[in-house]
Length: 99
Image (cartoon, rainbow, N blue to C red; front, top):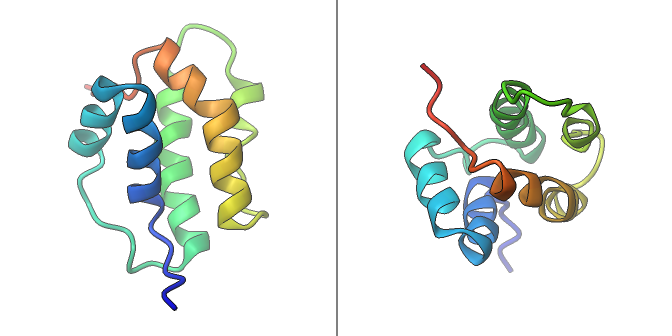
């Protein structure tokens, strides 16, 4: 039984369900594989990416960004991501290229 976690792929799967555009931008803007990293480190890497994306918006995003935790397991992380962060991503056409 393979319990390997790949948050990048899981995020891509979730985004593909709700927005082809967000999915394509995710793949383009986050090209590096991270599945070789321990799950907590994967969470840190993707949290950093999404914190920057959310933090650059012209509205308060603290409540959304506080869901990007590492003190939870990967299933809880994905649940929070899908329920609380993905709607925000879609509403604001994220991710965006940062100049």
